[in-house]
Length: 106
Image (cartoon, rainbow, N blue to C red; front, side, top):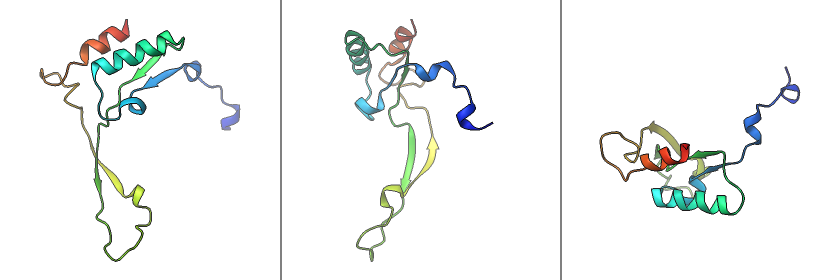
């Protein structure tokens, strides 16, 4: 079936918020709480939340010393691993995002 004829799932009409655009790798419980509060007070409560703090591990290729402009340099990184950030590990470490996740689910 062609893409144009497919029926989209209802969740594509939901507004959601991804923390990456606001905080990049500096995600904190306080920042998430303030962001959710601000969106809610502005009349745009998100129906879903993506907590993204740059969990991918990447590696860059070294630059070619003889090249004036490294062609495609912005794409020269490659994914080397995906690992749970310490903020989310269940070993007692991190800065405690668990309570924000639990609170947001309610």
